Length: 307
Image 1 (cartoon, rainbow, N blue to C red):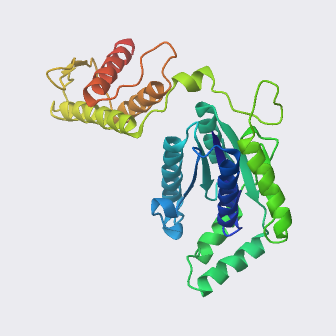
Image 2 (cartoon, rainbow, N blue to C red):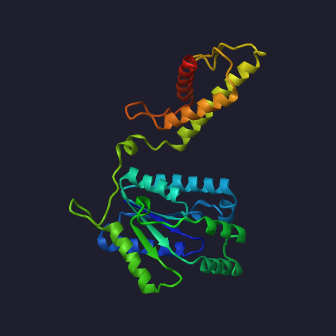
């Protein structure tokens, strides 16, 4: 039904706001008679991910965003409201989440906790003093420096509900929460103008959610083909290898010249990209290793024949 993206500096009050929003949504659903609607908060702790470990470096942070995005993708449905309680500090990542909502044909909004960095730092230090989970100082400062504020002019940041936890009183905060709840739960019809339900495009309807296991199989299968070519050429002791056989149920790879590893890697990257963005009238990406290898071998043979 909806995806809510919490956004703000570290220790800006996002988790408190997410809980209040969740409680308000549950209350609205109970009084409105729609008790089947599931409200779920997805955050680092729900996935057993530590804050400092998850933001220790760019690789860890990228992995965290990937895990959160996959969990969100699996959780979206017409009968649930998913609240992503994380920094969501990169506008490109918020765009990716918006794309997931659009592909699912649901509502979307951003709740921004606009808290001054100094205040966030004080709250972080206070957490550390009382023994609660807190960010290391260097990680906090790095995240604060790289934060990209949401802008309601961007479609992936709209509609934007802004909270000011460090200076708003409870009544003001409740008003913004109520506005968000109204937007997320209001019944819509053809005359509704103040609530936008994202509509999937042809591309998002057909370019399907390539599941993680499909990507894994394709990545693994194509790498095995590359390894076989490299090994065959190495065993040729400098002579040109004209044909490489991968397996009994697969076509041979026809090579009329020596092909270096950089070129093979480039061809592999291009193939994976094309397979993920396959033609709207074409077949879906392969879901098993043998099919992925056959598809990649056919692609290589075409490329080698034309070069």
